[in-house]
Amino acid sequence: MATAGPEIEQLILLLARLPGLGPRSARRAVLQLIKKKDSLMVPLAAALERAVEAVTVCEVCGNVDTRSPCHVCADPRRAGSGLLIVVEDVADLWALERAGVGAVKYHVLGGVLSPLDGIGPDDLSIDALLKRAPEFEEIVLAVNATVEGQTTAHYITDRLAPSGVRITRLAHGVPVGGELDYLDEGTLSQALKARTRI
Amino acid sequence: MATAGPEIEQLILLLARLPGLGPRSARRAVLQLIKKKDSLMVPLAAALERAVEAVTVCEVCGNVDTRSPCHVCADPRRAGSGLLIVVEDVADLWALERAGVGAVKYHVLGGVLSPLDGIGPDDLSIDALLKRAPEFEEIVLAVNATVEGQTTAHYITDRLAPSGVRITRLAHGVPVGGELDYLDEGTLSQALKARTRI
Image (cartoon, rainbow over all chains, first blue to last red; front, top):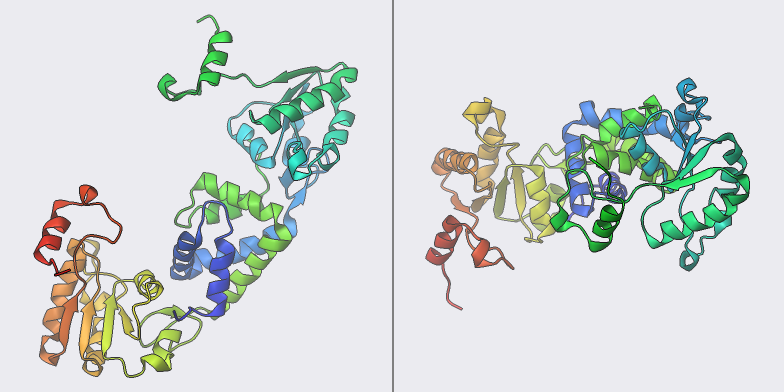
């Protein structure tokens, strides 16, 4: 087929690599960009340019922000927080912040232990976590409920044990708004075990 | 919630306006961009910048390209083509090109007649179509099978009648790979009427 010019094809290829966009939707996105050149394409190009300059990783917690320490670490309302939430990924941190979990602090591991993928303890931000641990009363290991996530949680629990900090994990249970019918047996039995008084 | 810096939030807002991305997936896309800063974010910023400069609308057919006349109009293999395909939108032109419909030429209307939205004949590229019509033997009105599309097709047929060019439309029928069970009655009855010998 006749192509639409190398600049446009290149843009489609790059957009198709974003999560949630495939080759077809990237093509639609590019057409949308071109249609709304002044109101969308030009601002997006400028915003990307600015973000490339500004984005940095927080040296304290590993969050992604335009300053280091990041907005969360520098937030004065969280200064005395005794609660540290350990997450796998920046996306998890953002999800918890969207949920409005309160004046807590975070630590981003940057992944989970996965020997098959060659990811060991040195590839994660675990040493930095051990250094921060004594500042807190409680550390919540909010890793995903996957095999790798749970392995990582066990490993970190062992490493943190000497510090004497209380270590917890997120509750398992029925998702809010979820239907029992569609839940797997593991979740259901955990939810029953951890039942609470109404 | 603490935000992630104005540059990042701005980027999320803009990406969320692309078709196929919502606020949540835009957030994920931005995290992906930041993670792959050198291999994805920087090239994407540069590609957008270049595309903003390069993109133009073909003065002959209305296609979007980096040159005018566009690659399709300038293609020497299509020089003597007697077939002009009229489409609503550039996306339709690209879809037909992907389908490899052969050495044809196109004309992009830029929409369909829609009195409710205040879109009349003067808002579409109909006069330009009338001027091009005598160059061709056959004009396929490949507008969408919606009420507005069909209204537009009728209007254009009336306007083209004096030129004496043969005017056709795309066949209705069962989509290739489609299951009869899921098809609407209109399509099924059209497919039966237009049945062909095996």
